[in-house]
Length: 265
Image (cartoon, rainbow, N blue to C red; front, top):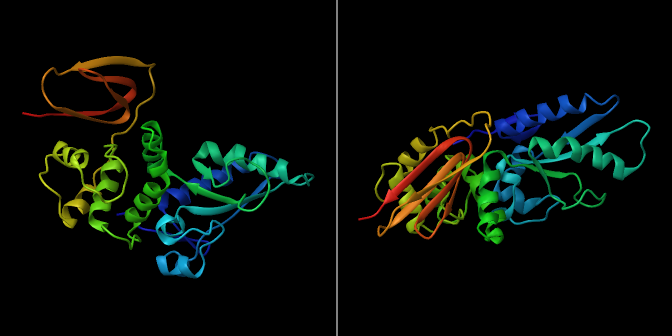
């Protein structure tokens, strides 16, 4: 489980704090540009805190990123530029490539234009769900995973959601983080050599495992795994991507990663 850190009176995940430091360094490369940021204070980084102050998004606790330590409020100072659109565009040009997801869909000045979320390891979760045509589950899953990872989730099925969270963090896609343990999640658990639903202690042990490190890209290669007549579930992580075919899976490699196949009886 990740530990939130205090920085400038706000609580952040360690990777969000590091990303903000990179953001400031990138901003310093533009003469005169200065990035300002704020975040969520400790009293508000809880479900009770969100009930008191839901912040600019106005979302309830289970759909809020405030308790996750990944919601920040960014703006820029750019001497000689009074145009809000120019300042916001400059901010997007620096923040988005570093992994900050703007709350507003377009860089248009207005309410909420300073709200950003640092995706960190959960960017792939959102990508997976959108790629499967289940984009409606992406935001609730993102909030649930990000909160479970730092221990601030206070909703139902905490143990089950923590399990799904750690599987996704390891690059093992098991669908939405909703606490519903279906065959896909159970198969993912078995792929790690476990049986049944792990205990809280086992899930804590999972949180200590490191996902595979990506190597430098050496082009793209595609291959196929064929298993005729037998049940098969496949999971990929890192720079490997699996797509189900009629007789098995195709795998596209854009770098290093891990593929796990579980073949039924």
